[in-house]
Structures are given as C-alpha cells and as structure tokens.
Image (tube, rainbow, N blue to C red; front, side):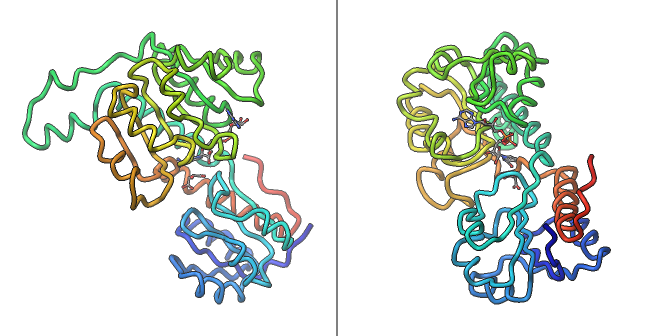
Length: 317
Ligand code: NAD
Ligand code: MLT
C-alpha cells in the first residue's frame, strides 16, 4: 500500500540520518521536541507522518486530533508509547525498528550482570568518596553460575551466548521457543517453576504484556535461591518494584541491575528507593543509547517510511 508522504514530524530526538534520508527523497521534515499535547495535536494537522522515540506518547487523544496522519514510526523496538488499537481503528500504520538496537541492549545487559557480580558501581563510588574498601566489595565469579534468561528472542539469545563465554550455565523460558530451538544457542529450556530454585542471576527480555506484568514478584522471590540477582533491561513493570525492594531489604535478592522503570523518568516510590538502594545498579533507559544503534534505527525507520511512500522495499541489511 502506498502512502502519500509529503510531510513528517519528528517529535523526539533521533539521529540526523533519519531527517537527511527523508529530505533527500523530497519529504518535508519538521523537528519539534517535547511538545505539550495541545501543541503536538496542532502541529500534527500539518503532517501525514510522525516519527517518535520514547518521550512522545501517541495516545488515542493525539491520534483523534490528527486527521491527516497516515503513518507513525518508532525509532526503536517496543511500541508501548503508541496506542496501537486506536491507530488501527483510524487506519494509521504503525512501524518500528525491531533488531536495530538489540546488540546495544544486549551489551548493556551483560555489563549490568558483570557490574553486579563485582560491585563495580558501589566500589567506584566509595573510592571516589575517598575510601579504600577492598573487603566490603568482594564479589562473585560468573564462572559456573546459572543465568536464567526469560524471553529468548532477539536480545535474550544474544545475552545468553555472550554470557556462556564467561562459563555461565544458561537456562531459559520462552513460550514460543522449543527446547531444541533453545539448545541451538546453548540454552536449556525449563519451566519457570524449575528455573526459580536454580538461577543465580535472572535476566528479563520479554515484552511488557499482561502475561509478563509482575512476572518477578514476591512469591517468585520466595522460590528463588537466597541472594538471586535480577537484571531488567526490557520494560518497567515486568518486575514488581515493591516486591523487589522488599526482597533486597530482606536479603532474598542480592542485587538488581535496572535500566527500565514503571515510571520514566522516576518520580515516585518505590522506584526512587530502588534506584538509591546500595545493591542496585541503575541506568536511565540506556539500552539503545549507543551511536551505532541510534544511527541504525534512524536509517531503518526512514527507509521504511520511504518504502511505504514509494512501494520500494527497505534495503536488506
Ligand atoms: P523479541 O520480540 O525479539 O523477544 C521477546 C521474546 O519474549 C519473544 O521470543 C517472546 O516469545 C518472549 N515472550 C513473550 N511472552 C513471554 C513470557 N510470558 N515468558 C517468557 N518469554 C516470553 O524482543 P527483543 O527485541 O528481544 O526485546 C526484548 C525486550 O527488550 C522488549 O521488552 C523490548 O521493548 C526491550 N528493549 C529494551 C531496550 C532498552 O533500551 N532497555 C532496547 C531494546 C529493546
Ligand atoms: C526500545 O524499545 O527500542 C527501547 O526502549 C530503546 C529506546 O528506544 O529507548
């Protein structure tokens, strides 16, 4: 289906290559960031395309106020900030760039696992504050430990194969991946109730959907090894933040590496206490924040827009 694509609003900062590519093909591009909703709606009346990253919330209200909008693209993987149902009802096409930032998200996950094992963040902070606390920050080896990977899609399987290089045993669960499929990238598929008692580290790589909301909860911590470490670079809400804080405080959880939060940026409890917790290493949703990933997703979303506008398929990379 071809879309008459004359004018695109880019409402979150994306790499300049996106704008350049669209402009080179005669599409008029306007970049306006952090628009309040009424201004976003007013601006959208002039455009048939919208490109966002995470900040712009493409709600039913925004879509209802944008009669000319035909296509919305997210320069990223998840489309949680776009109301897909409302878009579908209005016949607005929604595009994303799955895969463009998978390696970056995977590498951040691996760095959080390593940072947790060796207390890198708190030890660094302590040293900067003038202390020399070698004993306090004794860590653990990853070699021989069991890493559970929940969600064996693009990012989960990349994390598993990299952590195998450290000598970790990798187990995992994904309803869409067979035991044979998981074994092909070195992961032993198990049911969740088999995973909890054996995992030393649990890393999450599922979408946030009703089946995964609060997947890691208070009852799960009761079934896990005491001191299990949790890593979430997927979406806030998959880990029950109140339960995680409680488990960190009573020792059932030995540490957490968090890139994503229920509220972003976090302004309320229990997220703020979690971030400040000494056993937590936290980053502000940086999974995709590398030059490489941002350039890739910017080019991919522009190519997809152009392919729809001209019926030319996107370049195969
Ligand atoms: P993907 O679609 O390739 O893989 C997700 C996997 O989760 C699928 O294989 C799916 O079958 C599985 N899954 C679904 N329900 C499940 C359940 N109940 N239990 C276990 N597995 C289940 O997605 P991806 O590209 O690997 O992304 C994974 C997550 O990471 C998404 O939430 C995505 O939005 C997020 N992400 C975050 C960042 C970041 O900046 N932190 C960057 C990229 C992606
Ligand atoms: C994504 O879904 O791609 C991630 O949340 C990364 C991002 O774009 O910030």
